[in-house]
Length: 109
Length: 135
Image 1 (cartoon, rainbow over the protein chains, first blue to last red):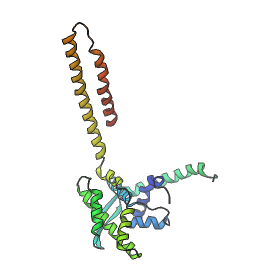
Image 2: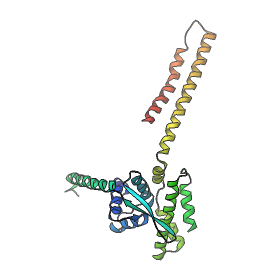
Image 3: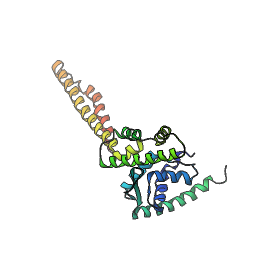
Image 4: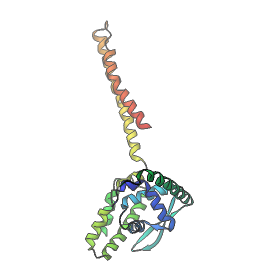
């Protein structure tokens, strides 16, 4: 499993992407991340909620309470207009970083 | 399930009360309960499932940082302010005492300036620490 501090700076983008696809709640997001990466990366819930707080404060996402299920009410997150713009920018930036890093990382094993 | 709630209460106990805190606690309890249900479905005993969910949760420090809204930094700034104030008072008293002894015992030789320069390093250090912390 990958070191979590290596991926830390990109957590916002990962979570924004998942919320961009559809409104999701916390546990669903952590399951989705584990499933998509074949369990190669698992986010700690504590980290996840900290990211939610941060994104919400920056007004990149919004939350609302969903229907009652399993005896509790799920809190869903929804991307905002600002969040979409931010995600688009982050993706552009990521492609740039990837290209630059590949110049130095490719070819050696 | 009560065990989950009490664990979450424990994690959050030294975060100042706020609406955001209550909302997050409710959210975490709900999500953990759902996770426990899933684990039980996969064949774990309830006790094991709860323990796993709690252990997997990770380090609460990240959330504290976000919820506290830089509370820790503000506290540090206040503390340095107090250190600075104390150092100013303290050094003023010491210097005052030196001046008094100087003029009371040997008014012909002015020697109190030497210990004064020594003592002044104290508030000076505190001032710059306070300044560095302010930025």
